[in-house]
Length: 442
Ligand code: NDP
Image (cartoon, rainbow, N blue to C red; front, side, top):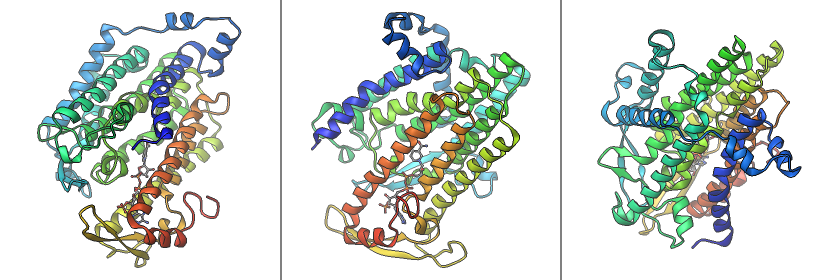
């Protein structure tokens, strides 16, 4: 049953999320990334909505061609080229891997070849930039708004298709969730793991590619634009490219681990994931680079080093915390965390058919500091990207605000689920590790 608050949130997001993306990108295009600029113009009557809209670049055949080629290329890399990276990269887990057990008891198989797709795409990007010169490396920036319309078309098309598919030809009917509320189902998804054929998995494809593969290319395109406009690339742009590049590479290096995260294990595939992956992620996660094209901030050495350290420490915490839980769960506690035997709380839960299962909740390492210290590391990295842009405008700080809301909401959502799952055992765990994100504070 959908409560009124969830429904109101869904309606709010369906209406305003596309407008927010447009507003941010348009503010950069027409107001040098000032978020107050358009508002002031409208409030003072200086401009009408139609003036802003008429100045907005329309969808073009060129953008449609680029976008179609881009998505088609990623589909080919995903579906037709089995992973070879795991054959020569020590420690990398790729190739066919199993996901978590779905609520209906299905274990899906996935072809993990994201790292390979990322590598091939980037090798081609650099080969083009330095050798072939088929297109300008500023091509993404130069077509940014026309490409936004393409991304929206795909985002809405895939979400609508997933909804229809969930009703009429689901990949696994037992893993569908119907609340009876059209808007909620459209947004939060009906099918758990929609697929076409045996291998084309919507969640894995849309979350990772085209969105996350594009992330680093988008940043490179911004750097190329700075070079074209100012004859140099600023250290802030290099910092954003490097820190976000590490985050993206980490995602692909750990793509098999990603199969066990909340997105994959608990969320159904609807507009939230479909449109979010196509539009929200590539457009709003890359705002810092876009901002730096309009405001080429050159940081003092001390500031640049400080931001780099903050970003790297954040990444270290994010990765180590995730790794500790992964290792602990994979070995069923037979491992060492920070050189010692792990401490944990034994817990049990009941499945729908009444079968009792046992699990463990880690309480040592970073998991003894706070219940979601991986989110804290993620937030430190996010802060570093934003700080690289200086303090002249608030637009680049949107990412930090958004990530704080997303991850705090996730804490609450996840803990609600875990309390339902583990009951009294979860209460023992929260008593042992009382804080969520910041030891001693929250
Ligand atoms: P987690 O990896 O923290 O997974 C939470 C689950 O882990 C819980 O539901 C529970 O599942 C299990 N768990 C909780 N506490 C413990 C414990 N003490 N010991 C063992 N298992 C435990 O969350 P996410 O999947 O949300 O995040 C994964 C990473 O992805 C994070 O680092 C996050 O920062 C990042 N992320 C980034 C986003 C972005 O947009 N950039 C978006 C979302 C996430 P169970 O039922 O198995 O017990």
